Length: 315
Image: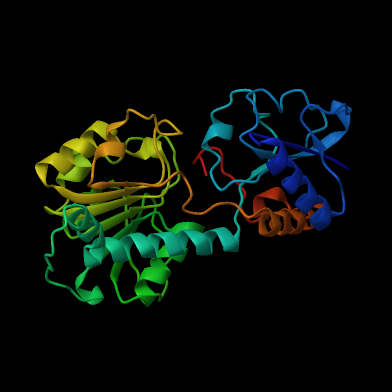
């Protein structure tokens, strides 16, 4: 069985991936630009491959994304329709995302971003301090990463609610569960901090807009660790100017890298991260790929594998 490794890699990154995948699977994948027989490729291991890259592989039987998000893959009209698609579900990545979410919520809760602004002004001004159990945090999305982040926040003592489009299964984990469009605005009105970890789908694109932000109590905080297209950026800036938002922590943007003239760079109320909330670790991700491939080869249907993507839902 031949593998193709295809994606938006620099040469050193590509070789790290190839080495990790070879060590984990026992097979050395082919890479873009090398001479190989397209008819021999049965599995594609991808990270934002060039549009159309997978269309010329007649024997392709499985596509495994090396990244958690698959929105760009699904946006490629040439993606073979009948080939199962898996997204990356890596416990190491979920743990890293939970760490970033906890850091951002702690910094918003304790006003550390405000203190950083006062330091630049050389102004000594303590403010009142709330307990964690007095801070209401809403996590949008309770998939692998969202659930990991919500559990970490519960463990820190925060009052955590989760919101999803569809009703999630009940669980006794301290996370209040809310589902459906009608439940969102009331939940936002009872949220001090919102952490977005939703998948990007047609139903969630542009979700964080003027109406969403107007539902928040004055002085709320926003953390977007999912996709830039979830946020209407002009509406977010307007909400900051209106005092609806106190601070925003943004790891993802509509255009990446963030253009040098973008107002987010200059706004002291916005903390900009360069899409680093949970970087993929080639070693742990390659182990996940190897386990998925072993189960698939043993006869497990693709739809029963961890990370199987329902193309109708978009995740």
